[in-house]
Length: 207
Ligand SMILES: C[S@@+](CC[C@H](N)C(=O)[O-])C[C@H]1O[C@@H](n2cnc3c(N)ncnc32)[C@H](O)[C@@H]1O
Image (cartoon, rainbow, N blue to C red; front, side, top):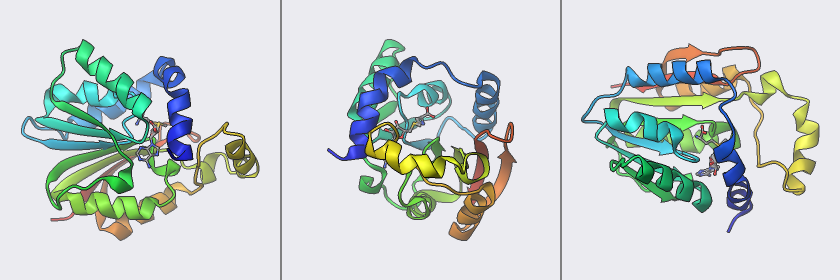
């Protein structure tokens, strides 16, 4: 098992009990996402964690495939969905780079608090673009550490070595938006609730 999976497995129980830091912003992000959902849609969530967001959106779409590198996160997500008798989410323990989805088959991809945790966000964004149908939507929420916490750069490698932090990447909001545009996406909606808050983006595959 890789270091990243181990880290997320280790903190999964604590993560599942943590209250949402900014409930009002979370609700607004859910509402905006909901505006793009339709009952016949196929949705993928990458880095779904304990499944809270997938569970909220599930009644509004046909099916959600929700993946996460951590088997413990997935186990918690599955038990939450079972407790609510939600049957249209397939939770799967899988790294994003292991994911094999046919091109142009998805309506919406969700990537919430995940892009800054990837070694290769450019590759993942390109992969998401390929998997989406023309006109498909990529919804992301990403903390842009280069804007808000660039001082963390000094500490991050040591904290990671000690197993206190996962891998994190530092980039600005502009760099993230450029990444999406370079992949072919048109950014349709951009919202940052506060200076140090995650950047919420809705990007559409041209078509
Ligand atoms: C900060 S949590 C966010 C979870 C959830 N999306 C949320 O908003 O609460 C990041 C999640 O991404 C998962 N993750 C990290 N790297 C991953 C990868 N390469 N492939 C799949 N999942 C990954 C972690 O296991 C963790 O559950």
